[in-house]
Amino acid sequence: MPTAWPGTAPPFDVAAGYHPFVDYRYVHAGRARWLDADGVERRTWDPVEGNSWLTPAHAAVPHGIRLELQPAAKSEPFIRGDQPWEYWLVDSVDTVIHDSGRYRLWYEGAPEDLWDAQRRQHLPARDIWGVVLCYAESDDGLTWRKPELGLQEWSGSRANNIVLGRELAGPRGLIGAAVFRDDTAPAHERFKCMFMGQTDAVPGLEGLPHPGTPVDPMTRMHEGQAAIFAATSPDGLGWTVHDKPIAWHLADTGNVAEWDPALQTYVWYTRGWSWGRRTIARAETTDFHDWPLATPLVTASPIDTPWSDIYTIGKTTYPGDPSTHLMFPNVYDRSGDTTSVVALASADNIGWSFIPGGPCLEPGPRGSVDGGCVFAGTGLVDLPGDRIGIPYGAFPAPHKHPAPGHGEGIAWATWPRGRLAGLVADRHAEFWTPPLHLHGATLRLNAKTEQGGSIRVELQNEDWTPRDGYGLEQSAPIRGDHLEAPVTWAATTRVSAAASRPVVLRFQLTNATLFGFEVVA
Image 1: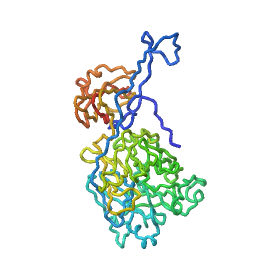
Image 2: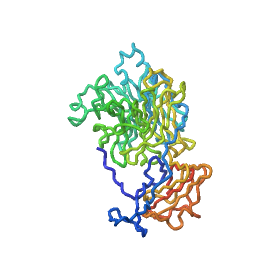
Image 3: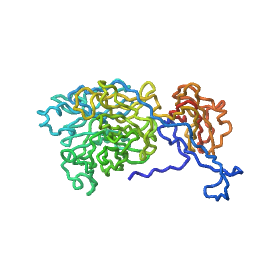
Image 4: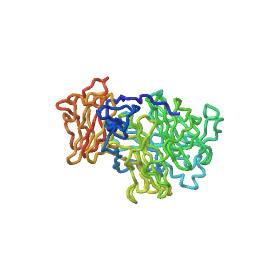
């Protein structure tokens, strides 16, 4: 069962930093109020005599806005499958971490010998079990290098960038690796990895610490018994693979795992199944080497058709804002054998909602590098040029089409900084936040207005009354296209509130899109 999430009562803490509008957490739903003939608010259970009529005077009800996911721009591929062990790049296993000033990428390649019938029959790990986890790095996210690490022999040479798989993973093989950095772990286990492999162990009798551990019935769908294994590393390069499975589960697409400091647990997002369709499943544990059965979490999207699956995960957080959890799964269209990427958001890493307006990433024109299908990877990061981006797998052929080999690549799906989604006002709009504790002294908006458009902000108390000097009439209108527009009232930018005093923000928008706000300490 998911860990209970505390702190659901207002006022809500809002840390210093940027906060994107990816759901309605910062939009108050309002409150119903009914006034009698004397203008007095009547309580819900007060009796009303005779045929008296009450007048609605609802408070702080938003109007005129809609939340809309923004389409991503695409870069050219920065990684190509140009080595024999990268004959085909595995669709959704692209994990980027910005670590100690470097961009670090772990991705899976299926070697060319898996497509050679003569060589394949002599391999210790065949088909999906025979892929390798590769590594690349970059100083700027644009120019990448594949270091010759010397960890795995390939055709008599150790000059390659393989870090896990084949002999390095042992006879269990490897697919769907989830790499993450765990700063709570000892230095020799700073990096962790979960992946699916093959085992002869009997579920519940060998492997996991507890007899009778639940088993995903899909684990026997492939040749042999599937299970999830763990590997640990001090640096993300040299890995120690642990012998016993950590979960009995089938997940042959990219897993995602992490330590959640708010929940104080490890959280794992993985492939699930529901009545023959792919879903997203979730589990959590305080012991990384012992996981419960993952349970279905996301089974359908707003753009689903009867021939669709929710496929892959792409779970991450917004850069610099660990309270904004995001997912970039695929909607897999079985009728066309292709994919598109949608997005979900969560405030607690437990409950999720789709961001309206998707998909945000779709295949390109036929014949292009991503004209067949696209798969979002893991890791939303800041990029040069005031951009944010996630890696995505670009494939020229449909998903289940025989792999052409060396045609695909890994590219960036990018947005302007802070503009993954936004609150759109086509004409006049207004909304209020719930009561907030702002851990900062000033506010900046990421916003864009159209011709004749503007945004004003009013500071209010918890009872929706304006604070002196901070009304809409004192608010300087924000116009134009700004990533960091300061909010000012008359001659001040400082928020009129002690740290202990809650504040309500009232936004008035005209022909504008508000992407997010920044609390500046």
